[in-house]
Length: 169
Image (cartoon, rainbow, N blue to C red):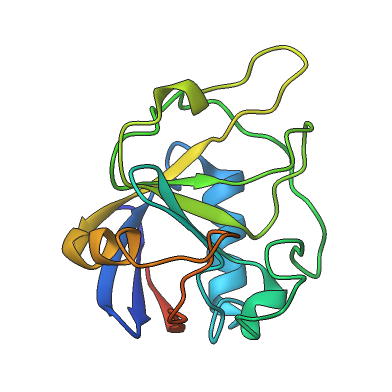
């Protein structure tokens, strides 16, 4: 059975990701549940760093100018760390964001725009960022978002909204 995909309809265009349910069932399953519940619809990219990544998934980012954007999580709380697949944070991969503490991921994730190998896998005492998906089309849109002008807090000067995330199972 093929992995599901998710289509992101953004103000900059569309991109599609494969979700690695076969290798990362907890993390990918959490994303799918949130997407199917409409959690991500209407949120904005709240952190964009050129030659690093673009970050998304904070509920406070429905207002792109909120001082709380980047600080929130999902209504159900955090999820268990999952590092079974040991996939590298290569360009175009989706990784679960966290606070750096174990089991602190939830709804926020980032898309790597370069190979961030130093974010790979779990090391004792530190939670790294597990990869749970990869862009399969629309990397040009992701790269465009990654090159957008940002303010001193790494927020896009012109807000970039995700209108809808649709999971295709």
